[in-house]
Length: 295
Ligand code: NAD
Image (cartoon, rainbow, N blue to C red; front, side):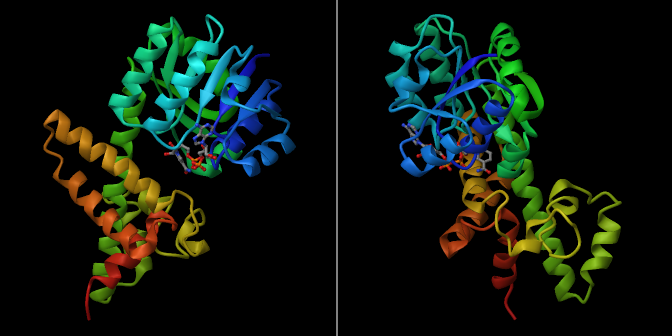
């Protein structure tokens, strides 16, 4: 069993670190927020007084932080204190350029590293069923696999440094765009007198089938797993969908990709966030589409 430093014990990092403890690892955790530390301690995490304290003596260090700026700041602080050979795993969702910069910092310090963002949300973090999309050298991936396993349903190697983030961003571009398309289809159907059930029964077994329809349907009472059945309590919050779409839109611009749907999806999630929807599940965008549809 390994000693794992875990920095960022929030909505995702809290339950992820708890699953590492359950698997028998020693987890040394740190967060800036005392309440997060208290919860982690109740789940068996050894609470450290600083990020440096959390990484001291660790075989692997996992970061689960809000953005690239936080990850790079944290690496500046911890890298001088990390023992040679320690594996760095960043599971935060960050800009591809920041992820590649984090790999450079690790390489300059002579440390193996992977970017390993996740899909599956807080439910997946709690159940230990996240999908990890991993970028980095083969050898670092092989070392990361058993560390990630207690938190994962799947761990997939997506290629070199930063490719985990590229994969995550591309997946969420599909997800954001498809949730908007499914929501528009339901609202259009409503306005033309089509019962929700009829559209669902056909589209769910036809060419319109997708995760946004059959797992997290934006209309309540059609799919058991949908957050629409729980007043759109997330799930995957619209604010986080906006964050990921912005990363995709900016990467599309930088790489010269003609991603018109991605740009439009970003605008629509921005509008929904500006209207106060950021804390709701991303499927609640259907209510914004209804509200903008007029009489
Ligand atoms: P969160 O805000 O709940 O947790 C982040 C934690 O990091 C906070 O507790 C914060 O106090 C802590 N933190 C910030 N700077 C720190 C520092 N320098 N040292 C120590 N702790 C620090 O966010 P979250 O929902 O847990 O998301 C974490 C990451 O996972 C984000 O990058 C997010 O985009 C990604 N993600 C989230 C979800 C989700 O459903 N919540 C799903 C997939 C990916």
